[in-house]
Figure 1 (cartoon, rainbow, N blue to C red):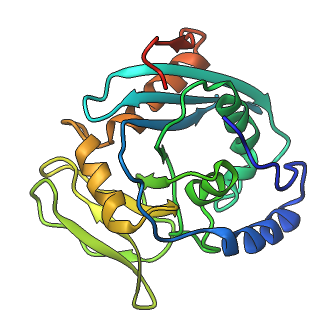
Figure 2 (cartoon, rainbow, N blue to C red; figure 1 turned 45 degrees about the vertical axis):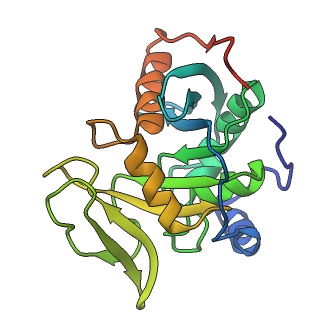
Length: 234
């Protein structure tokens, strides 16, 4: 996959914040993914106290959600763990994994925030801009804003609000299981992002793209996972 080389990652936290403030102007908060036949999920894993980041991308056919390709990459990071700046810690390994991906996913799901971020540039928005393709943030907790608890039924939603602006949606993907927090990453509107999260959530809290990426990232970190490629990739 082609990646826009917009900025370096060898930065101080203050420099990283300035990059975020500049890049958020490039985020497109609306758009249509068009005909979706291939989706991808990403995740990163590292042992406590380790500076080695293991990042993965898993591509799945849509709508059947068969895994067609898995790639991984590892990188040593010098960037500290700072909430709100995780892209600068995990980004280099994730971008290397994307460079190894032969598939061309129509939509990418990220384990983290999109625009529901203090500077409007969570990992899904940041990476969406660098990849220049539709991206969705699917987080397990709120980083910014408030949201009421959705009703207990699968498919129930509640807006994530910041100063009366809707910046995402709490989405119940499984009955009476904690919601996930969906926000626009890049080049997709919130309604389609929520629809795709629900369409790819098959009996688990996490949608299948990020669930498969989470499983693979942990396996890679343990030395058990291997990249795979199916002949059906685009």
